[in-house]
Image (cartoon, rainbow over all chains, first blue to last red; front, side, top):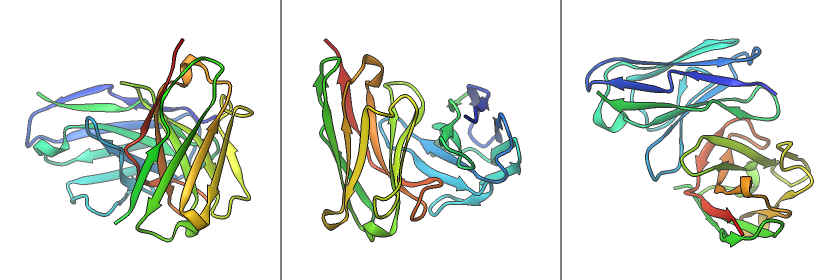
Length: 107
Length: 120
């Protein structure tokens, strides 16, 4: 099983600042990496797939990068609606596995 | 608009059984694989099971293999999860998810989830 490790567990950021979230895979997943956003009481929403392709409905301030075992989600200028938990997920291998999540909170 | 609405969650005793359903609308159901992903209260996401577009291929997480059965009825645009031999650690919200393709890579749309509580 591919283990996905996200860091940090919690990121405290002021509105307007940049947020950088990391996701590491225990073995290469090529670019088969997705990111999801989950707000309290809501279902997760697909944010990024193919490591860097933004899903419908998300603005350009969200960007994904990386390949192999190291991936990054960057939010260039945090808005109030971006405070949430973000999960990465690999789909290179079965079982599909998620990271434990990074909570982005208001500083 | 894609809609996925789960139902069937309940309180059940350890060792008991439960059947979850997911009603899908807003897309051509039999063009896509479907999955169940669960989330224990306050915890992260855990993939449970996936079924391909026509039901021929199913996959399960190891801890669910032999206890859970995923199925679909394309005529009813519905996805199911039969859960047997339930354990306390199966307590979670169970989300139905529309896959990215006929099989399943990532999860493009998610339902709100239905809560399964396993407790004596």
